[in-house]
Length: 184
Image (cartoon, rainbow, N blue to C red):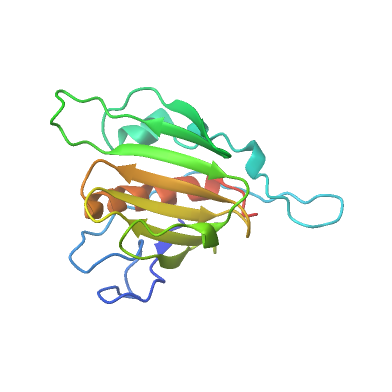
Protein backbone atom coordinates (compact mmCIF):
# COMPACT_ATOMS: atom_id res chain seq x y z
CA UNK A 1 0.00 0.00 0.00
CA UNK A 2 1.75 3.24 -1.12
CA UNK A 3 2.00 5.84 1.61
CA UNK A 4 3.25 9.40 1.47
CA UNK A 5 6.66 9.47 3.13
CA UNK A 6 7.64 12.33 5.43
CA UNK A 7 10.92 13.41 3.90
CA UNK A 8 10.77 17.13 4.41
CA UNK A 9 13.18 17.50 7.32
CA UNK A 10 10.91 19.96 9.14
CA UNK A 11 10.81 20.59 12.84
CA UNK A 12 7.91 18.65 14.27
CA UNK A 13 8.09 15.86 11.68
CA UNK A 14 9.06 12.33 12.52
CA UNK A 15 10.73 9.72 10.32
CA UNK A 16 8.55 7.10 12.01
CA UNK A 17 5.25 8.56 10.77
CA UNK A 18 3.92 8.11 7.28
CA UNK A 19 2.10 10.90 5.51
CA UNK A 20 3.05 14.29 4.13
CA UNK A 21 5.24 16.33 6.45
CA UNK A 22 3.25 18.84 8.47
CA UNK A 23 3.55 20.72 11.75
CA UNK A 24 3.53 18.56 14.88
CA UNK A 25 0.05 19.64 15.94
CA UNK A 26 -1.57 18.27 12.76
CA UNK A 27 -3.62 15.11 12.89
CA UNK A 28 -2.35 12.12 10.87
CA UNK A 29 -4.18 11.40 7.65
CA UNK A 30 -5.90 8.20 6.58
CA UNK A 31 -4.10 6.29 3.85
CA UNK A 32 -5.72 5.04 0.69
CA UNK A 33 -4.32 3.41 -2.43
CA UNK A 34 -6.01 2.61 -5.69
CA UNK A 35 -4.78 0.81 -8.82
CA UNK A 36 -1.28 0.89 -10.22
CA UNK A 37 0.59 2.63 -12.99
CA UNK A 38 3.27 1.21 -15.23
CA UNK A 39 5.46 3.61 -17.20
CA UNK A 40 5.67 2.99 -20.93
CA UNK A 41 8.77 3.11 -23.12
CA UNK A 42 9.16 4.60 -26.56
CA UNK A 43 11.27 3.08 -29.36
CA UNK A 44 14.45 4.67 -27.95
CA UNK A 45 13.92 2.78 -24.68
CA UNK A 46 13.35 5.93 -22.60
CA UNK A 47 10.32 6.20 -20.34
CA UNK A 48 7.45 8.22 -21.79
CA UNK A 49 5.88 10.93 -19.64
CA UNK A 50 2.36 10.04 -20.71
CA UNK A 51 1.24 13.21 -18.93
CA UNK A 52 -0.41 14.55 -22.08
CA UNK A 53 -2.98 11.74 -21.87
CA UNK A 54 -3.91 12.43 -18.22
CA UNK A 55 -7.46 13.76 -17.85
CA UNK A 56 -7.53 15.61 -14.52
CA UNK A 57 -11.27 14.98 -14.07
CA UNK A 58 -10.70 11.21 -14.27
CA UNK A 59 -8.16 11.11 -11.43
CA UNK A 60 -10.83 10.75 -8.72
CA UNK A 61 -13.86 8.49 -8.93
CA UNK A 62 -17.20 9.58 -7.49
CA UNK A 63 -16.71 7.29 -4.50
CA UNK A 64 -13.18 8.60 -3.87
CA UNK A 65 -14.28 12.24 -3.87
CA UNK A 66 -17.31 11.35 -1.69
CA UNK A 67 -14.88 10.44 1.12
CA UNK A 68 -14.28 14.20 1.50
CA UNK A 69 -17.91 15.33 1.40
CA UNK A 70 -20.73 15.86 -1.06
CA UNK A 71 -19.55 17.42 -4.33
CA UNK A 72 -21.05 18.65 -7.57
CA UNK A 73 -19.97 17.05 -10.86
CA UNK A 74 -16.35 17.94 -11.72
CA UNK A 75 -15.72 20.96 -13.95
CA UNK A 76 -12.94 20.74 -16.54
CA UNK A 77 -11.03 23.97 -17.17
CA UNK A 78 -8.02 25.28 -19.07
CA UNK A 79 -5.84 27.96 -17.43
CA UNK A 80 -2.92 28.93 -19.64
CA UNK A 81 -1.14 25.69 -20.50
CA UNK A 82 -2.56 23.78 -17.51
CA UNK A 83 -5.48 21.39 -17.87
CA UNK A 84 -7.54 21.49 -14.72
CA UNK A 85 -10.54 20.08 -12.94
CA UNK A 86 -12.49 21.44 -9.97
CA UNK A 87 -14.82 19.67 -7.55
CA UNK A 88 -17.07 22.23 -5.84
CA UNK A 89 -18.71 21.16 -2.60
CA UNK A 90 -22.48 21.17 -2.20
CA UNK A 91 -23.14 23.89 0.40
CA UNK A 92 -26.27 24.36 2.47
CA UNK A 93 -25.50 28.09 2.83
CA UNK A 94 -22.89 30.62 1.72
CA UNK A 95 -21.22 30.71 5.15
CA UNK A 96 -20.50 26.97 5.21
CA UNK A 97 -16.74 26.35 4.86
CA UNK A 98 -16.23 23.19 2.82
CA UNK A 99 -13.10 22.15 0.93
CA UNK A 100 -12.78 22.90 -2.78
CA UNK A 101 -10.72 20.21 -4.57
CA UNK A 102 -8.80 21.09 -7.71
CA UNK A 103 -6.19 19.49 -9.98
CA UNK A 104 -3.93 21.14 -12.54
CA UNK A 105 -1.94 19.01 -14.99
CA UNK A 106 1.13 20.99 -16.08
CA UNK A 107 2.85 19.49 -19.12
CA UNK A 108 5.69 22.00 -19.28
CA UNK A 109 6.89 22.74 -15.74
CA UNK A 110 8.07 20.38 -13.03
CA UNK A 111 8.03 20.63 -9.25
CA UNK A 112 11.05 22.97 -9.36
CA UNK A 113 8.65 25.58 -10.80
CA UNK A 114 6.28 25.57 -7.81
CA UNK A 115 5.69 29.08 -6.47
CA UNK A 116 5.67 29.65 -2.70
CA UNK A 117 2.12 30.52 -1.61
CA UNK A 118 3.35 32.18 1.57
CA UNK A 119 4.63 29.55 4.00
CA UNK A 120 7.68 28.22 2.16
CA UNK A 121 8.26 25.16 -0.01
CA UNK A 122 8.52 21.73 1.62
CA UNK A 123 10.06 19.00 -0.53
CA UNK A 124 9.43 15.31 -0.01
CA UNK A 125 8.81 12.00 -1.71
CA UNK A 126 6.02 9.45 -2.04
CA UNK A 127 6.72 5.77 -1.27
CA UNK A 128 6.68 5.26 -5.04
CA UNK A 129 9.70 7.57 -5.32
CA UNK A 130 7.69 10.41 -6.86
CA UNK A 131 8.96 13.83 -5.77
CA UNK A 132 6.47 16.22 -4.19
CA UNK A 133 6.52 19.86 -3.11
CA UNK A 134 4.03 21.32 -0.65
CA UNK A 135 3.16 24.95 0.04
CA UNK A 136 0.25 26.60 1.81
CA UNK A 137 -1.38 29.98 2.02
CA UNK A 138 -1.27 31.52 5.49
CA UNK A 139 -5.02 31.15 5.99
CA UNK A 140 -7.01 28.98 3.58
CA UNK A 141 -5.39 26.44 1.30
CA UNK A 142 -2.76 23.85 0.44
CA UNK A 143 -1.01 22.82 -2.78
CA UNK A 144 0.87 19.54 -3.27
CA UNK A 145 2.74 19.35 -6.58
CA UNK A 146 3.48 15.79 -7.71
CA UNK A 147 6.37 15.26 -10.14
CA UNK A 148 5.75 13.49 -13.43
CA UNK A 149 9.34 13.41 -14.63
CA UNK A 150 11.53 16.50 -14.39
CA UNK A 151 9.46 18.84 -16.52
CA UNK A 152 5.81 18.02 -15.74
CA UNK A 153 3.64 17.80 -12.64
CA UNK A 154 0.13 17.45 -11.28
CA UNK A 155 -0.95 19.98 -8.66
CA UNK A 156 -3.43 18.89 -6.00
CA UNK A 157 -5.03 21.99 -4.50
CA UNK A 158 -7.47 22.06 -1.61
CA UNK A 159 -8.86 25.46 -0.70
CA UNK A 160 -11.56 27.31 1.22
CA UNK A 161 -10.60 25.66 4.54
CA UNK A 162 -7.80 26.28 7.05
CA UNK A 163 -4.33 25.07 5.94
CA UNK A 164 -3.95 22.06 8.28
CA UNK A 165 -7.28 20.60 7.16
CA UNK A 166 -6.54 21.48 3.53
CA UNK A 167 -3.14 19.75 3.65
CA UNK A 168 -4.59 16.67 5.35
CA UNK A 169 -7.13 16.32 2.53
CA UNK A 170 -4.57 17.14 -0.20
CA UNK A 171 -2.18 14.53 1.24
CA UNK A 172 -4.89 11.86 1.23
CA UNK A 173 -5.82 12.76 -2.36
CA UNK A 174 -2.15 12.61 -3.44
CA UNK A 175 -1.98 9.07 -2.05
CA UNK A 176 -5.10 8.11 -4.02
CA UNK A 177 -3.93 9.49 -7.37
CA UNK A 178 -0.20 8.60 -7.13
CA UNK A 179 -0.59 5.11 -8.66
CA UNK A 180 -2.81 6.56 -11.41
CA UNK A 181 -0.09 8.91 -12.70
CA UNK A 182 2.84 8.05 -14.98
CA UNK A 183 6.23 8.30 -13.27
CA UNK A 184 7.69 10.36 -16.11
